[in-house]
Length: 166
Image (cartoon, rainbow, N blue to C red; front, side):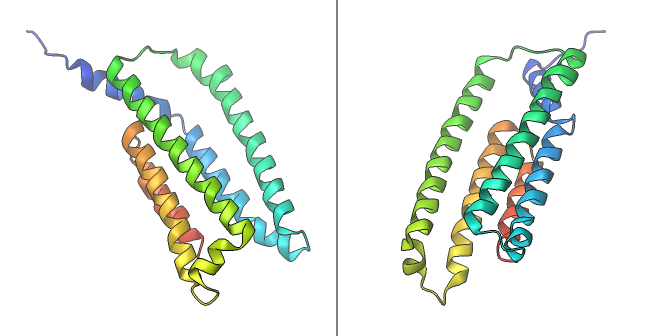
């Protein structure tokens, strides 16, 4: 009896196992926890830029630790795979989308730092700024979820978008 093997589905399942180790979820959870600590640090008297700098430093070391775990613990056990051109093209599109969203975020931070964003939305329209920032979270993580074939990122994008106003 012959069984038809769908190579594209096999490659898709092999690629999706990249996220089944749980390390990506730990990293995203760490982002939630560390960013929620910024208001706590501000209540202790730390200025906002230093709170964000401390947050990004912590997140860098958490990312570095997770990356080292992936390289030294997960890859030796699961091995590595070489994917086809279709998967490489999806990854290339994901990188382009992330670069565009990174530039949009840099522009957003620059507009916020100069006070231009507040003048656009007005002091009374705080929700406009929250919607703008939330849209960046949702669009970025939705694009990643689509290109990486990682459906949980849709939910994480909405969680991040809803986290900001509350």
